[in-house]
Amino acid sequence: MSWAALLGLLAGLLLLLLLLSRRRVRRPGEPPLDPGSIPWLGHALEFGRDAASFLTRMKEKHGDVFTVLVGGRYVTVLLDPHSYDMVVWEPRTRLDFHTYAIFLMERIFDVQLPHFNPSEEKAKMKPTLMHKDLQALTEAMYTNLHTILLGDPTDVGSGWHETGLLDFAYNSLLRAGYLTLYGVEASPRTHESQAQDRTHSADVFHTFRQLDLLLPKLARGSLSVGDKDHACSIKGRLWKLLSPARLATRADQSSWLESYLQHLEEMGVSEEMQARALVLQLWATQGNMGPTAFWLLLFLLKNPEALAAVRAEFEHILWRSEQPLSQMTTLPQKFLDSMPVLDSALNESLRLTAAPFITREVMVDLALPMADGREFSLRRGDRLLLFPFLSPQKDPEIYIEPEVFKYDRFLNPDGSEKKDFYKDGKRLKNYNMPWGAGHNQCLGRSYAVNSIKQFVILLLMHFELELSSTDTEFPEFDLSRYGFGLMQPEHDVPIRYRIRQ
Ligand code: HEM
Image (cartoon, rainbow, N blue to C red; front, side):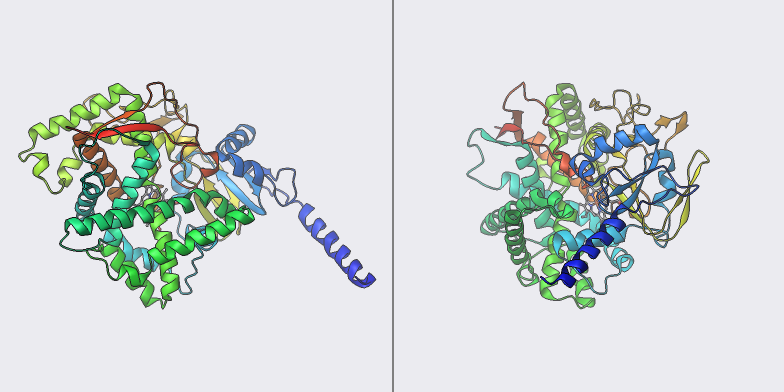
């Protein structure tokens, strides 16, 4: 290397060091600033290792609003649930949900949609998850859960099966959810076509699950070289499984899928990119239901009183029902809506295990008014983060013994849903936020809740299911998953199940 090149390189390095060590200065009116001690990286390592512990530590140090440096980005964290509404109802032009979502879409799923207009997409997709279409999805889900759980004649009556609870719940819900949204082998269904549905959906699940396990590292860009090759080959396999050409041969597709494919066609997206977008959607729609059902079942299995209460409620509804459940091809919405005990247990389980980051990009310099009258200035280009998992969901001022599962926490003494929770003597609007809130609240929540309840009902009706060992401990969380939705356990929990005789 010549002297000139060496000097140039040194000068470049010096300039980079200078830029990295140039510290941002907190301006009057801005939240407390904590850039950490490592230039550029800031708190990235601690944040990635265990975001909940890190944010708890920062809250103790700075209060419920502060700005931290994380991997080159300044992130303002807001942890006052009374003030969340000021964020989640802001218009996109000020606080934008999609910029970060598009970044993740590209980084994790390699999806680039040139003329992507998120508002237009949302306007098209929203109706396909509501009203008549919601009813069609719920009915299809019930049929498909049947196919997966009860359809295989070699399973019926063949004694106890040993498996992991996460694997069982995730497997059942993702496969049935996939068949519901992406279609089945044939309509009307035959024994053969249902057997093919089981084989094909198992292939989709097992391939998807390998990608799901790599997701936190993919999102943080921290895959090893070996993992990168693995991720590439899994994605390639999923793109083939979900290619538009392959989907075109499937029957009984949801109107959600039809609308989404039409939307991609109208944007002129290539078939290859369509397949990638369909894999992204598989994760967005199916990545949380299985883990939700896992935690709910685990809490019920570990709390005999809660399980007995859910079972008693279910038996009471059966007793009042005009038609025997075994003759129903679907569970009417009225039936699903009259289970406040199961609703409360589900909400309680979600309170303890749903930990999404609610992230918004700050699009313009703006003032953030807090519910208590304080006001903070936010800078354009920064990121704003709400973490409802810490507050309200695990906040001891709101919930007595917040770490404990109490199946009736969301029930009033008269059996109706409890909705009044308080902090600082003031009633909270957002007291449990597994679905987010405001403009970007989850569009699939009714379908997800219906599906999980149907799954639990089918288990209560047709299966004996128990923990393999009575002293099974609760598994720790996989700490790398904070921010992605439902937490997953560090390891699975052994169970056994058999068809009720
Ligand atoms: C237990 C299952 C689920 C959980 C816990 C969950 C949770 C969430 C959360 C936290 C958000 C983001 C809110 C925000 O950042 O403000 C979200 C958004 C969304 N969810 Fe879900 N979700 C679930 C299942 C589903 C299903 C089954 C579907 C569709 C079939 C779905 C469709 C969507 C869509 C389309 C959005 C984006 C809304 C927008 O663009 O404004 N979700 N979900």
